[in-house]
Every structure is written in structure tokens, then in C-alpha cells.
Image (cartoon, rainbow, N blue to C red; front, side, top):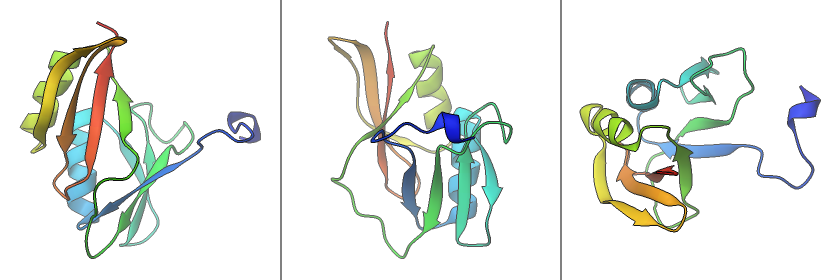
Length: 122
């Protein structure tokens, strides 16, 4: 799918995780993501549309997770519903939800300790 790639655009996001299977379970439960396994140490991330769509990123096994890098934001049509799904799946909300000029958002940590955000226009 060469047309899906744009010159100089962010094309793929990798998340370091301490347990690939637990990370897959969390993100599938929280967001409906699906995965392509490339062995026990890596899984490609597909959005809720499944493997028919392009990979948006990957889960990479690592001994530890460091925080403080770029913040990955996930879009939601229903921020409160997504907040419930994230916490039910085992995520820890660390900020929000709060209003910002583009809508509302919250930040959470996944079971490996990665911090991500979720935003919605309303």
C-alpha cells in the first residue's frame, strides 16, 4: 500500500512493552486493536478495522519501558466510553479527563508503563 505512506509524515509508532501478550490483551480490550505476530518479541498493530488495514505501529518486547518521549494520542468518538474501556482493561488514568482548546482528553499508562493520551472533539 505505497499510497498510504506520505513523504516526511509520521508513519509508524512502536511501543516498548515488558510483556507482548499482556500488551496485546490490553490494547485489544481497551481499543479493539488487532495484531500480526512476528514472533514472541514483536506484534504489528492494526486498528479496529483489523488486518485488512495497514499497520500503524508495533509492540516491541523490551526489558524496561522509559517514559518522557513523544506522547501518542488515540482519537475517540466517545471519550467517556473509552475512559471506561481503558480502566476496565487495566489502564491507569494519570491525567484528566480535561478540556483543552480542541475538545477533551485524558492520559493513561498501559500495563507496561507507557503513557498515551486519548482525545475527542467534544
